[in-house]
Image 1 (cartoon, rainbow, N blue to C red):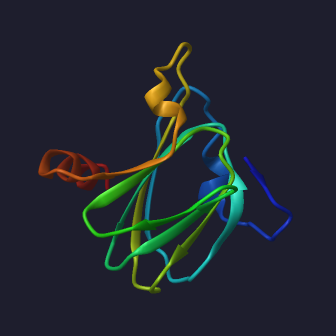
Image 2 (image 1 turned 30 degrees about the vertical axis):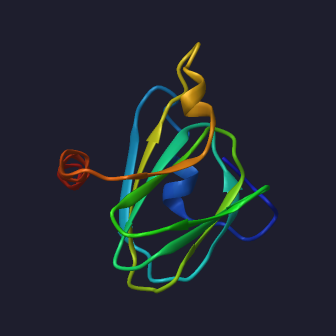
Length: 124
């Protein structure tokens, strides 16, 4: 995991890439309004509850509305800015697979159906 020189002492971000083959899971009430620019070796699925979140990459700023998730590919530098300190973020970090489909190499925002939401809630 790398970051852009800003202080980034989040233990969970440092742990994301510890085991290269596992899926890392972290859910937390943010209690803060900014996660500085950083990147990691694993791809990230980020789902937020309680308010909207802005995710900024080197080329775009994404508006993440309720009942949606953003896919952030491996190695993409990004910052995270919840609109409110009451946002709960659910993160799943996936290892990169050899010969992965191009779909997984591009950021995107997608709606969350009930099955995916229940699967994320089950990871608590």
